[in-house]
Image (tube, rainbow, N blue to C red; front, side):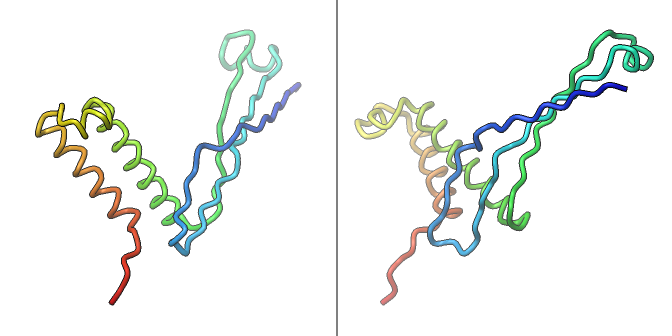
Length: 124
């Protein structure tokens, strides 16, 4: 049985790191694997001449909780950017050319992101 394996490295997704966090989230680049089987063995099972499967694996170092927290932060950032875009951008928010609902939406998303990525406050 003839089998061909091709491995290619793809740049990792944009990642951000919280300097105030003790957890280190270090994703490594995903690995793409293509496997092509010989026509003789694959034709018996599928009835086609050629099949190619692609699989993306991303190895992440650290605990699953740290990974989930980082994904939640990235989702909140993306949500805030989409809320800005929907409201007409930063200039529209500053000049007051948005509706009350759009301002509330953006403010709620900012609050949610601050909850996930708190700014250290000085203590007295």
